Amino acid sequence: MAKSKASYVCQACGAVHPRWMGRCDACGEWNSVIEEVSSSAPIGGKASGGAGRGRPIEMSSLADTGEPVPRRKTGIEEFDRVTGGGLVRGSAILIGGDPGIGKSTLLLQVTARLAKGTRCAYITGEEAVDQVQMRARRLGVEQAPVSVAAATNLADILATLDAPDGPDLVVIDSIQTMYIDALDSAPGTVAQVRASAQELIRLAKKRGFVLLIVGHVTKEGAIAGPRVLEHMVDTVLYFEGERGHQFRILRAVKNRFGATDEIGVFEMTDRGLSEVENPSALFLADRQGEVAGSAVFAGMEGTRPVLVEVQALVASSPLATPRRAVVGWDSGRLAMVLAVLESRCGLSFSGGEVYLNVAGGLRIGEPAADLAVAAALTSSLTGVPLPADMVVFGEISLSGEVRSVGQTDTRLKEATKLGFRSALVPTRRGKSKKSASSMNLREISELRDMVQIFEQGGDHAMRAVSG
Ligand code: TYD
Ligand code: MG
Image (cartoon, rainbow, N blue to C red; front, side):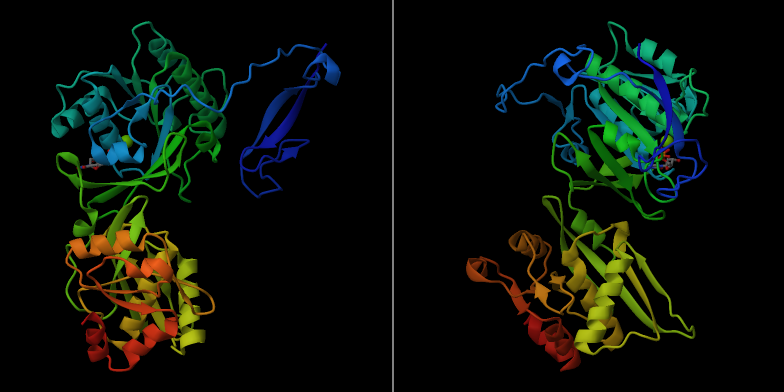
């Protein structure tokens, strides 16, 4: 007879403890240890000494049947690209983002678009039905045949969805408001979030509906319910943007049915989210010609080139420890670029406050932005502006080398399209040298070369670069 044994498992790091504790002493997380009951019966077949309950499983070959996975396209190009070309039957998608960023709006627009050929259900635990109806009217989609319900009891929701004429697409807004009666803990706790998501995903696989789950983000920026949700779903999307900016970016961080790193760019309007086909033009719209401290970075977001302005300000500081602040980039990376500029190029930023900002509310993660950041910093320090028609990209190593980055041609092509005439880039080797670009290229292999251009003739030297 199998005996049950309780163990206490940290939901954040997986450490097993002999008793409950308020703070996991393995990872330091608070309130993450919960009781799990495991059976002590051996598993497996007779050969392994087990009870022989398992049946042999059927194995298949790697070659598939050749039929492409059927996908539901929403027709919202920016959304379809991020999901990998449309929504896959039976898949579960988690959409995370700060409160008020626009998750509910986006999903209502998506369901309204799909509702013509697909039975869509929108279940909200955050708002009342008439609030959703009001939003639908504002978005101009109130005629779309979407079924709306306000509910939080998961048993009721499952019973509704598990019907013969059940929906093909279900939105749960948000998973933190859902609860299962049988569990003691409050809605939003790890146990509730995990169990609710598990039940919903199981039903989605069984019935073959697309499940879109909204998940709130904690102060630290992770989806609440420590990582457990991200492992359970097929796709994780983050909806992000800076408050006060009208741009919103949908980013895939995990996708079992497509590439990650793809982004969709939206603009917030009073009639909902509208697609942005040419993000570079939008991000550069407010740029003012030649100003010291500004550099245009030719970046890549997934398969798409995106041009953004990197702004730097170096100001003298009365403080003993001058401030360093970054918006839209990694602060550790900024510290590295500053250190390389100081120790390899002889510049001095110590004693000065340093601010760095990526205009438009985009977050860049590419190391290729190093050189653009270094150029903006040096430009601010020396007071020498970069030519207005110049783009910059390249990775910087700790030794002060400028390293080449991928997709040079795509970056240059996008820059040309937007009217840029020159580029400060890493020295290119071999056959990539002969690329058909009408750009005036200034190739450098050392960061020192860039600093020299600023220091030498200042304005003239930079102009000479841009021809
Ligand atoms: P909402 O979709 O409710 O955000 P979330 O579900 O992520 O919390 O949107 C927040 C607010 O912003 C809401 O009052 C509506 C407004 N909003 C617009 O006016 N236009 C837009 O395009 C979007 C996305 C939101
Ligand atoms: Mg919402």
